[in-house]
Length: 268
Image 1 (cartoon, rainbow, N blue to C red):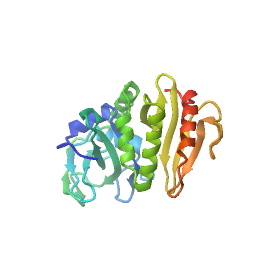
Image 2 (cartoon, rainbow, N blue to C red):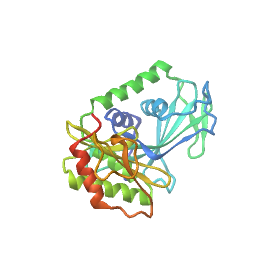
Image 3 (cartoon, rainbow, N blue to C red):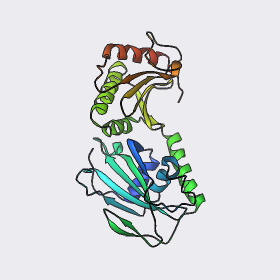
Image 4 (cartoon, one colour):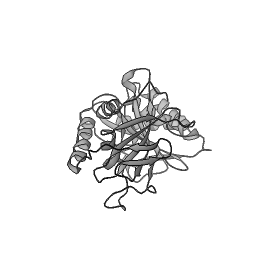
C-alpha cells in the first residue's frame, strides 16, 4: 500500500461515493473506550456507523505510528452524541481511479466539547451533531453508489488482498492469479466484505474469505463440481479450506474455477 499525498475529508467522501471503501479482513470494533450511545450494548457497527462516519468526517490526520506507514485517522460526530474514530489505509494502484480506502478499525470517544485521543491529544469537536435522519441518509447515498457502480472492482480486491497478513495473503494472491489465468476477462468486486469473481452478465462464480486458521476458497455455481470440493452444504457453497501448511493443488483449483465459471450460481 502507498499513500498518494494529503488526504482530506472531502476526498474521503468522494472515494466512498465512488464505491472505493472496503473493510479490512482484520477490521476491529473497539468497545472499551466508552462510546456515548443510548444503547451501549449495541456497540459500533461497520454498516451502521463506519460508512456514515466516513461521509461526515470533520478531521483527517495521517497516522504517525511506525507500523502504520499508509495509515490515516478520521473523526466524526455520531448522531447519538458521541464521537467516532476511524482508522484506515489508502491503497493506491497505478491509476488515481484505483485508490481505495481500507477501514481497519472503528472506536468511540466520550465528550461534548473535546475528546482525548492517544495519538493526537485533545480533539476539539464541532458544535453541529448530525441527526439520526441525516446519518441514515448518508448510508443510503453510499448504498445507491454501490448499486449504480458498474466498474470492475479489481482495485478493491487488490486492496483487500494486500491487507491480509503473511501466508493468507500468499494464498489469496495465488487464487486470484489462477482465476486471472483461467478467465482473463474476469469481473471482480468486494461484496459482503469479501472478494467475488464473476463472468460479465452471467453472475459470480467464486469468492474467498480469511479466517484465523485458514483461507476459504469458495465456488459458487448451479451444480456440484467434479470432484466435489471437501466442504460446503450445496452447489453455491462448495469450498476448499486452505491452511498455512497445506499445499495448494493448483490444477484442481483451476479445474473447479473453469467448471464454476461455466455455470455461475449467483446473479449480479
